[in-house]
Image (cartoon, rainbow over all chains, first blue to last red; front, side, top):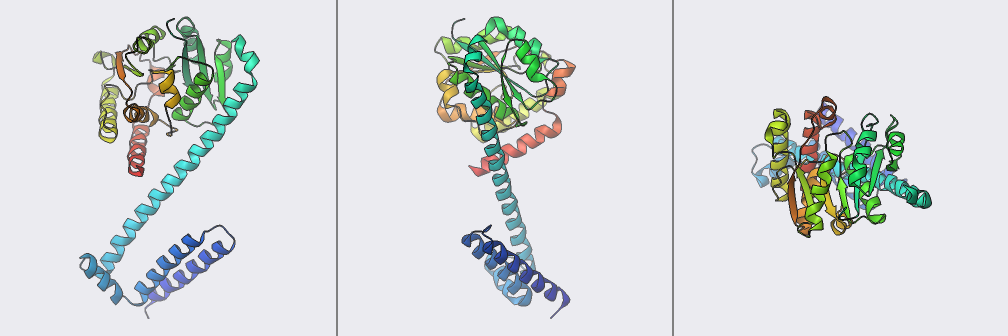
Length: 117
Length: 224
């Protein structure tokens, strides 16, 4: 086993343990637990048995296994950033709705005063 | 006044100009609603002193958020026509009746004030940025508008009530074009005369903000 393999496998074990801990404390749903465990396990298998990535590379028509893994990782990261962007935008808009509710609520409360304007 | 017209003025740190803007609107509006978007420079006090109804955001939420709040307030208070108007002194109050006229005449549900009719008035850099904004808006939402980024707009009561603003920031201008297309509203484009001062130029979208706005529009379009 090479140093990089040991490093990747150790990181995968660490990541899986953190994922399980997040699931246990209730901040991660079962679906996301399964998703992340499958993802990290795939990364671990690809590191321990590099031949498997060659099979994947042939399947999608890319020359080398390691290239296929890098392409797939980049696509996955872009998708993840996009998901985070959407989530952030939603949270931002939810804050706006709360702020708006406060602003319009005050307006309703000042109804009588408002009529004089 | 032909219709009960409410003018919504979104304002963030516009204390220098908002009072004058509100006073100029008094003869052409039944009510002026200033949305103070979390300003720290006395914008709300200046607007209230000038006679506006001030609706305040406790946090700065952006242009789109302020417009959404102001339009909702105008509809709740019984407006028949809602006009959006910039607080930086870029628009002329005398253009407001011309903006409302197509709605009052039953020819339009939404009106956009176009600054491009007299091209010499607009600085070249602004003109190019505007064209890019128009092209991007048309490519994403399928409706070409001569001045998609204009802040002077008018809506009928029905359109204002149905308008769904989800963009909190500058993308709102393009989102409004999207809403016009989505609802199939009749659009009128009215030529307006912009006033470009050093102050109003500094308040517009800079290059970086413009890029961010474009990026957000693209990502939002991906969202579907």
